[in-house]
Length: 443
Image (tube, rainbow, N blue to C red; front, top):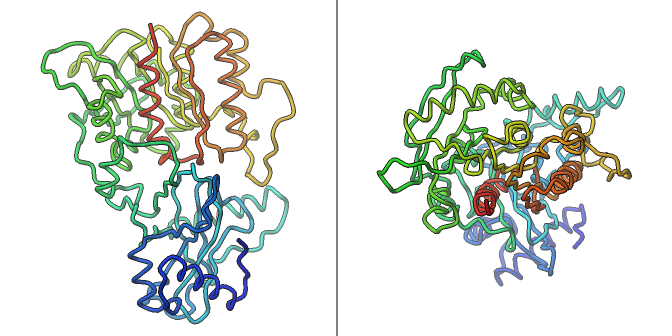
């Protein structure tokens, strides 16, 4: 369905959609209209087809704003719109109303977060000048100024406002998105976690010359001390505080999807330290093996079986998890790698969506892929789960290439592409699915 830019066409479009959904006559933007929108919940799903559904996103300009103080409202839909674009997607305002709307087609299997970014005249996306690299730098600087203005969808029924992830964005699960049933209770409580870490430790690392938190959580119901599977979760502060994973782990254990296990969530500290430690850093993993694991063993039994020791990581964390298992398979025998940053160390491989084109070469695409092809990891048999989002462009090619190289070494491996972007809302379900796979593999 094509939406004309004119105000008249816009009002007619929303009026016709409203009448088809609610069978009522209301003036677009009046109080009764918004009450019905609030009752229905947004975004509105229209023109449902076998593979795609047309979706209308609506934003109501708050009365606290002075008339015309909002010049534009941008929309960032993870893995759908391109915030790298020099013409970022934005909503259309119906003149004389507080109604802003945006229409897009989404796959019925898609999942992701979205946010609105209202800006004043002074904050509108500028016209960039200079070389291509200079313009990209200017665009990144502009994004840093507007992203703090992001807000969620107040009319959505799927908000996660009780957790940090959902403070300024809204989840959207299309009807046929991959199941995340273990997260259902968390979602129904709007992001409020009923379960928390059993212990919070401070890890003083001599090798890493610093201190950080560790969150320890056991899903065992037994009081008998015995070795359980051990799961190390990178970016632990996020998974403990921003989008807490404890309820989902507990539910997955109760329903038999996951075995009873000990989970250690490792604090990423900050962006700079994360980049240093999760980019194929041997010192970090030496510290984990010689300092962290002995510290954890003072509180919980730590298995020495590599097949029962899994690492979970996303993005750079996915790269780091794979690096650890390939170099120390005698200690780490299972990996859940989600949207792994296999471009490392050559960031030039990563392009904005507008510049992406599939590789037309059979050459190995990444440094780690070439190392695996050369024999790294060939003397072990790892249990591996790799996934990547359909909206991640070159990341798909890099992940598939890595999967092919690892499969040629006869590792037990599952690779999948989910419908979504570089998005923790997608990864949260993949953590459960991935751990279920790697712990169900035969010895």
